[in-house]
View 1 (cartoon, rainbow, N blue to C red):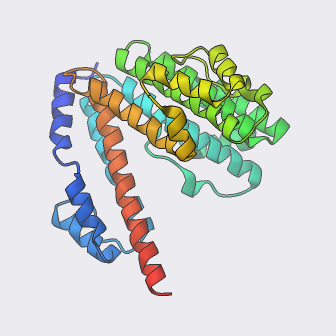
View 2 (view 1 turned 135 degrees about the vertical axis):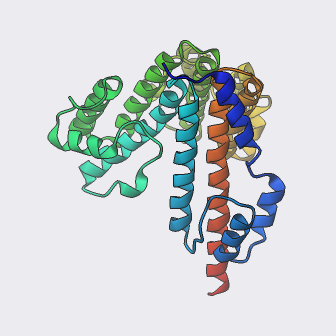
View 3 (view 1 turned 180 degrees about the vertical axis):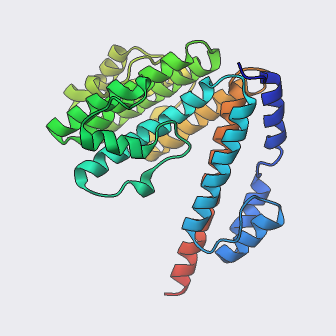
Length: 314
């Protein structure tokens, strides 16, 4: 048993939250004229990065910062559950990348998500040997079945669908003892299912395959999602009201891709509801997600600087 407590872990996270960047700081970073200037600004506020002159260097430093922070928090937390739950998504994404890379004879090194609980090198070894005995118990059957689907069909979409369905089944099992993780997982499954339904309609895909791609365990029964999709966009949009999203049909008609932002906002609002809890997994998950989002924004600012400088030099 680890000699730690949720009170200590959450108190530690509260102290880390004071170092998260805010909108004013982001605005200042966006005014930078080069990566060098952005690098200097980050170092001037004590951000844990060294000088960088490329997006690759920045990404590697942010990755190290993220992994280190997660490891410190994991050591302070009395339970491994939230980390297994979080890392499982990375494990699934990594397995998709490694599996496709092996079958296409390409490299997966630049496609890996961190942190993770399964070594991608182990994944590659298992796939190439067609022996999955060394994979962790919780992921062994999933990795074997996904390999079988890929080898027999070479259908990456079908293979990824199976991995996603298995992923959320495992996540629900990990989450069953914690109200936040359980409800968060159910909400995430629901959003994914509704997004799948919308894409079927927007891209005129054959609805007879819809039920095969949906994920069990969400807040809305799958047969209701299938029926709503068969009846058209208006009915799918109505289902969003069950998770407190109004006027979805108008939103989609203006910008179909805006659904990704809607989903992100719903998850963020859900996290905020639980975040003030003194104990439990919610503050831990919320902070790790906030730090990951922070790094995403920093990399997007760096990409914009590189893009602008490239255009100015043409």
